[in-house]
Image (cartoon, rainbow, N blue to C red; front, side):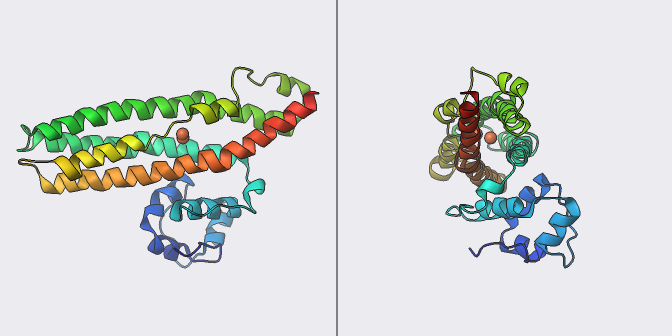
Length: 243
Ligand SMILES: [Fe+2]
Ligand SMILES: [Fe+2]
């Protein structure tokens, strides 16, 4: 896929990859672009252009890495973006899938055993996902914010307030992949479904599971390859300042 640039028209960007639509929402960008370019919209919305373009490209191309721009990114902007992605999973994608699974269970296929296991498996997955996101929202991100303010504020008081119980090393060690179970879930439907079932609803579930899986893989990549090294570098500088 060709790289997205600031001079491209926003409508063309969406035309090239419609899955970017929720990414735009996370930046507060609404439809009705007219002939405006990516740059025009970023200026209008006060969005950092290199960061926004890097997020679009990261989402559109799994081999893309913003090598040159990464050091200019604001860590708080990355955290805000990741937080709004969590909200999107919990308030939009997960309830959509849940509702579809309920519809399937209530349809004529209610006695289908493989569909019952889909429902149970998704319930378990949802719990795992919520725990993962909660850990980041309540521990990782607040810690990163502390590091950011201490690093930029440079005051001894702010440096002293940084949690000693947490570090990016811990984040790296504990950060699990939350997309793997989705593959199993898709496989229950794709490989092993049998008997009577509502095809339209079942296909819609598979489509949404693919969408969630792709979004989560890109999300995790941003956490591991962009956020983690940036914050680890700040941590290191703060340690040197203490000496
Ligand atoms: Fe996350
Ligand atoms: Fe994560």
